[in-house]
Amino acid sequence: MQLSVVIPTHNRAEILKTCLEKLMVQEGVEFEVIVVDDGSTDGTSQVMGEILRSAQNDSLRYIQQPASQQGVARNRGVAEAKGDLILFIGDDIFVPPNFLKTHWDAHQRMSAENVVVLGYTTWDPLLEINDYMRFLENSGWQFGYGFLKPGFVERPDLYKFFYTSNISMKKSFFEKEKFNESFRGYGWEDIELGYRLAKNHGMRLFYEPQARAYHHHLVLESDLPKKMQAVGHSARLFEELHPDVHVVPRGWKRLLIRLATNPVGLFIGRLLGGDLNYKLRSWAAFF
Image (cartoon, rainbow, N blue to C red; front, side, top):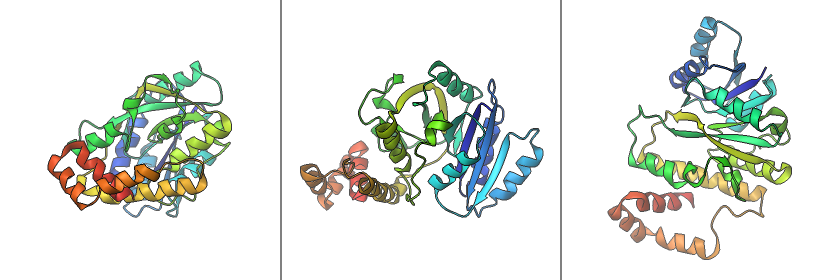
């Protein structure tokens, strides 16, 4: 087996169905898809049963587990994988027919075990993309592709771009560390794994924008507080695990953010609108 795609899922049965339809028509590479259902209650098992019955080969596998969060689900999926390469995507990621082949070809050009290939993820154009979603894509709060150029990422914080919406690596390299299963909420469990792989094993991150994926997930401005509170909690856990790395601002930076995110600052941000509004509200919820 050349490549194993690992997809954790939780209560997204219909979107997962479309995700799998896009994957099962991939061309030019031998692959399997492993779906790890992390305690879904929305009929995901029924949808997967229908898909498995209609599948014309055994390249799709379905694993169920009690709700344990996505890091646990990904570790479980890799443990079951038969492929030499592991590719992580989300259950709301749609890909074109050459997606897997693009990842595979990149690894054939760079066979060193420590090379990890990062693809490009953008919002699905079929969604009604709003200003908040554009902010998340362009600011670095969710994705920071605007800070990268194609090729090897030559920066000390390359681990911050370890995005499991679209990333592949040798199975043997992943198994040197695996996901830390103490992360129970959204965010940073992938970044934390990237940090350990870079620090302990010399990970080299190669950005391949031709490995393009589309994120089919409508995000609303009203989701901001809950999302950033979860990110802030996970970021503090990252610092507890790695106290030598400061991902949460401190000192004068923290003071400036506190001053800027007081009620007056947030009111001014709302009046001015745009990215400033989102940045101030994100920092306020983050802390």
